[in-house]
Image 1 (spheres, chains in turn orange, cyan):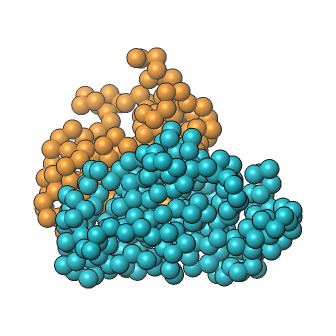
Image 2 (cartoon, chains in turn cyan, brown):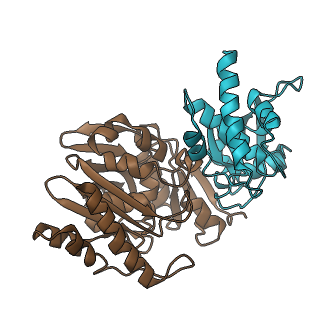
Image 3 (cartoon, chains in turn cyan, brown):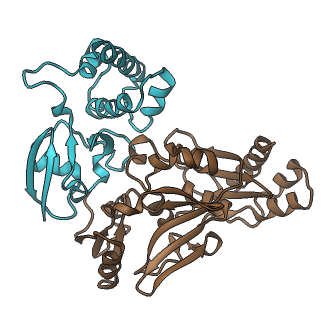
Length: 157
Length: 270
């Protein structure tokens, strides 16, 4: 079947089997390998992307369900000239990654957390991150980074 | 992990979806897919056709109708969690919704999908059973209402016919006091055992994961209406349940949890 998805602002088209999962559409058909497959059972959040602006686990969404909708992946956050998104910069500055495997999912779910809350405190961030696992257990700095990003983004508005 | 192959059809109306379902007896309804797709990836379900009802626009709503709140089947967990009307009229549902899975799951999963899946370990079915909700189903011969007490038939089995679609869930207002005790080891896990208690003119108690279907804690409710204390009622909480053992808990531990969690829930009601 034909699916048309706006990925990181660009119209993309693919011919896929109906059973194709969104994460495989992104990785294998569109060569966007920033989105990782972790547990493959909607538990770990490594595959988190934004679907119409909201975080979803792309290992548990069919490509067909994303047809006609907008997907944002980790590749879509930085400016075209390579300038990092404030959230990416906050991850870098706060050393919010160790092995890095969970990082794309952590960043994308954090985009959703930032969008859904006018103000953020530590508890809200931790609850927001509950569906994303970091096997390095580096949560502390991830939480710090999301809070720092909120502050930076608030200040730039 | 890929599901096995299937035909995919997207319905633009309930009527169209019913016609698609009627054309293939192995077809399944796809709403958010957060119960069905995991089962399909594990090859525990291999439907020949998926009828995607996710784009039917008029099935996502929460509205007051007399002494009930009508919730469209495609209303997502996130929308139940954040609905001001539900927070005011049926607060237990907002509370339960906010603890299902994790935020990304709640952006996709729907109350109708979870209910039609009929998992005894899921949170919404037990809450709807405790509330005495009414399920509205539409099929080739029209629309019918099914009481929650008649809806959950067996392990992942409901009263819905293969060509029927759950379109709406109606919940009574008036249960102003509520308690939700979900016992698990990690935030996003399924309940090892869960208890939903609601009190209006009477006190209803529902169990999560104490049997193949969601259950009412009938023994507790009977003791309470006969004037028993919280302690007396909680002591018999596991009567009539049939929990199973798994990696998280033995049968006896689940029975113990049921008694403890019912006591906590009833104490919370005051």
